[in-house]
Image (cartoon, rainbow over all chains, first blue to last red; front, side, top):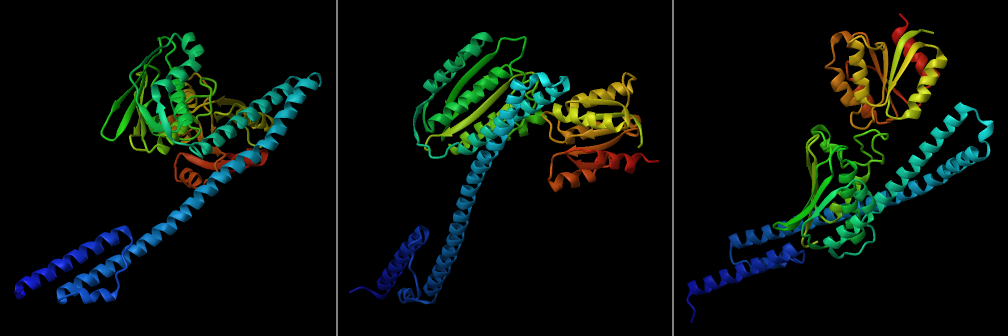
Length: 300
Length: 135
């Protein structure tokens, strides 16, 4: 025969087990607690615990529903934005192509009827429309990053090798010294990773000092939850007051005459790193080279 | 129409400077039109004027969105220039920006006399001259 005390203890244990089980269910979102559960309570305190559980579950379900609704709205907005970008870029291309094509025709077929000023105007039109075409293409590329892509194992040594092969004409011409450390194999998006290395390496070369051999060092190290990549150069560097804006879309620090390009390269890099759940940043001082860092988590 | 001695245009876009210079020339409202393609070049020019190497402009049209030193950053540096320069110069922002925050920001600044949207035309040029230089 169980004593009263033993019975009471068993009741307590059983109740605790029940509460624990329900708490687990609440956290998983599978809790079906209702007032019928009050029968499980052996005293006033336990009744209050059960009431608390029911309120907790209701609150959490409410929050979850709100969160779900926000998520759906956000996904829709995102989709809309991507669509908008795509359509805007495409629809803009057509009239622009007309401007470019007819200016080219004018330059080719009617050159002799234009005076010097006329030719100057035409040149402005051609240059501006070509630049606009470039801007639109790059905006389109930006919106496409990470869309419908498949994750795969990527040997970064191989990626860097291929990128450098592509750039070899430039590196040879500049007599650049490129040092590559041991790089890991990561899980990621292949085209994007290639573009990331491509942009960072071509920047390192593009913004080199005129009177110094460009030296670029690519390395990586294993950290707690991610790989840390490092791309160092001995180029012209970046002044501190500009550091915050270099990853923005179409941000440029120099006139187009000095360095060509639309200023989207680093914005691409940031987006690529971010779709891999990593981070990108830079350490630099004007005249003292730049070091770009980015991380790629192990379990992406 | 009012006639000024010198107007300075600061804009990184060469065709824009070209057009605005042409407009001012055709309006015949300034003896000299100086164009600079960056904030730094604009500042350097103003400093050189103070040293007697150039004609100090009575009016500056300043673009906002420029590489390296944008219009706002230009103003930060402009403020540090000698009082004798600032007191002679009237500064108007000339921008493509339709963002009302930019207009508000410009209007809140003591150094900025006005804010106008591109494209610049004879009517807006005339308004600026009438508003600020009539007397």
